[in-house]
Length: 186
Image (cartoon, rainbow, N blue to C red; front, side, top):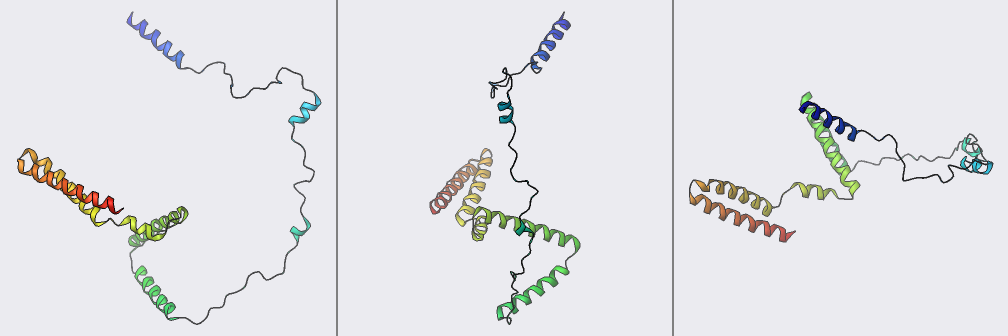
């Protein structure tokens, strides 16, 4: 009897989860669905033909211009900064060529990551200084983090001796002081 009951329940469950046989679209309704179509309604539903063929080209589009739009830029004599830049560039090229294949691959990955960060920051309208500022933690925030971790660890050893628990509470209070100081500066 239990098998028949289980079979009946599973059949009801499968029937309840099946998709409906008939569906109705409530978001749109064609009010002219039962009426016969006339020529004006057929013409209204068809898109209008363009007056000008899309294959027709403008005569001016086929003519080429002979005006000099590209003006070459002449390089002047190298300044002291440019010479220093060239020296740095050659030094960096020598260092890069001395790297092994795996080191070069890792260097290229790091360069791509930095370039992606810069592009993302430029799209968001941030300056490059703000990127460096987010990477460096403030002194007060570092101290709050250090004292917080020490306080949690010492509180965990509070079961061994009550001195650890007292030192842990003191460290957490100092961490909260540094955290409030950091928040006040922000």
